[in-house]
Length: 528
Image 1 (cartoon, one colour):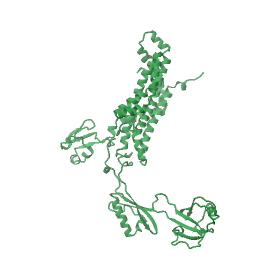
Image 2 (cartoon, rainbow, N blue to C red; image 1 turned 45 degrees about the horizontal axis):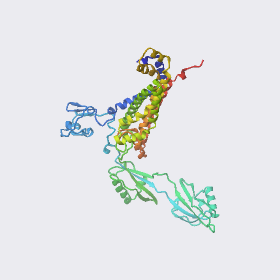
Image 3 (tube, one colour; image 1 turned 90 degrees about the horizontal axis):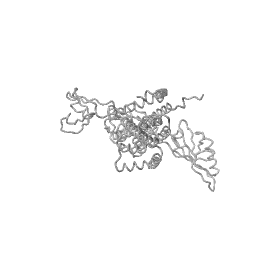
Image 4 (cartoon, rainbow, N blue to C red; image 1 turned 90 degrees about the vertical axis):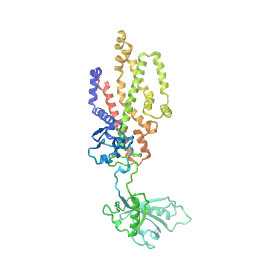
């Protein structure tokens, strides 16, 4: 309390409050940590309270076996969501359960049947791009062609001698490429794009090598350009194989025999995946795809799971919230313990100096040279990965940096007049260190605390990502990012853990920046 009532401290707090970005970041970070501490009350598959036969039960606090509610002799923990469907709860108004706002825990696998998806099959028709060839003379007249009539908008192949300039406006580069080939000169493979009506067309010329005589004809390959996956039409069928909405015009033109084949494939698709089917309508080939929303994990955001579901069927929102608590708790414990060890080591070194300081400094240099990651792997293989092991091993290396700053501060302050006055008055050594010098040497400790916290959170995420951190299935942001790497198409597994890690670390940096500026006297001094 004396430190808070100190005028200098009050002035620093006032400076910190004046920095709105840092001030609001501090309270927002505090709010997020408070919410994470109440994770069991916000995200949990266990009810907060169960009212049964006039008695109240609190499963979060005490254990209740299944026999208590169903009288079936089982002493195992009940599945409360299945228990809620039992007759004693479903048909009795006086028996009920109160679940958290988000009734899913971080280790709970969601039942696929509980995910609401439309029981419909979409039959989609995708046109197969047309391909045709035409052999031409130097004057752009046709010699022969195959499957080329569709590019001209006609029903029959063009006659020999037909002038292609009547149908196409060939680009100058294409004409130059043809002229070079007819002149029997070397030419590489080339592709040109042009439009025929509203249809974009791609024309390609093969690689040409000089011959003994110039060629009399050259072949042009025409390909229809269509957008990838662009559908010509689709129809949505329900479980009764009836169209949900008015079907596309293309569906109505399908012959009855072909339509029966498509309906039989759609019927099979309700239970199992089926291959695409190829069909010809009005001289045009189509790929027919049968699309149905199947529940396969990981699953994108859906009603009840706003941030999606991971590969093990666990709710991403619940794991994010529990992962926030683990990350901040680990960071606070690690930084607090590291600061404590660093203060003790730096204070003793800086106060006594001499041989003790030199000896301790050499020991610290040797200790800091040990490879932390190798030590972590070795200890994890012997004792197994755990929260406490990671905290202890990391803490044994993380205190070194702050000890350097405390040592420098003590070496600077121990010769000050107020310290020498305390010596002369016979004040005990421990009181000089912790009551007179240490309060004046805490500036680097306080200013570095938020940045060290951010570093600890990032280190935990990195170790979990590499597989050397917390044991699975502990909800951890690093483990979630590692899972996202395996399912790169699952954008929700990448976006939300990355965003959560970014926001928390950014808030910590803002707070650290505000504290550093509040403790910086240069900003508030004037040279007269």
